[in-house]
Length: 111
Length: 115
Image 1 (tube, chains in turn yellow, cyan):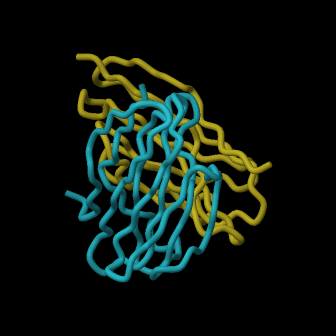
Image 2: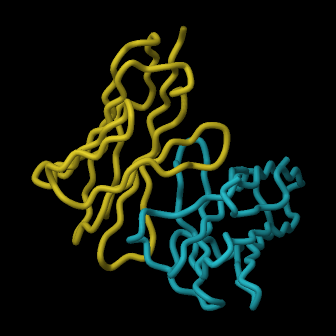
């Protein structure tokens, strides 16, 4: 059965710390992997990764896909309290029309 | 505001009842997806509609049904509700039913509590 696993489940850090969130997947015919940030309600799109080894970057957030290891990491540097959220990883494959989500990593940044 | 509108925001109902959740996709989007998010299961895909037709089905219970109307809004009907149905129900939309163009746009969700 196809599966998306995120780790850690939960993380508490101080402002200014750097964090790395992990997502691994077991999906046949992989097409893309997405990262979302979910604060109070609706998940909001962060990155879409399709090619291995190419880093996507947006401000203090960056993400990279490793197709050989079937995984992706999301890095957040110089964390701020506003980064507190659940970070979701989702995977799509060629025979599917929808994303399959991991259970998420809950990040709490304390002042 | 993402442009995807879900109503109601919160819903509390008793076991055995039936509820309808409503979603209006972002303007121009033809495809609607329904997801259920519970604490221990993460986001679970339920069903997808594209331009009024069912396109893909996920882990949707037989007690649940959905449809997409000619004006492209969608409704998710949940019947014979059980305590375990308590969850956040998200609707998402995309332009053409393909997930290739940077993912979906999510609505704010409907929180359903079954008591």
